[in-house]
Image (cartoon, rainbow, N blue to C red; front, side, top):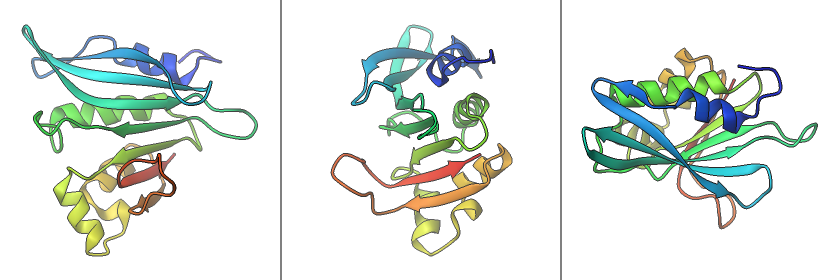
Length: 162
């Protein structure tokens, strides 16, 4: 990545028509989020002429020296096979490559039945299916946001920090 490149630009460059097992991943910039540093993206999967929504990304470019950049993954399409697939591996690998030390990813896990069930049984986040995948990608600190604060945080998320 180029020095000074924003997290948003890193993600857009990393996802530029990425092919995974005959499926192409593309992104669409949906515009600004609630804050000037936020940007909303939609990721699609395309096989031939069939294109479907895969998930949304909220990208926060940071507000130095106060807040580090982060990425939120949410709105995962239940009609697209994602969890435990090469597509999931590719998405999280690319997002991991975009994040630097001390930067976080938040992943909504409501549709990831294996991870959700393990967390409900009291398993440590990094020992779950999703957590162990993130651990292998270089994330070292984990938190289960099983009860999101406030009104605009969305569903249950696993947070991991590099």
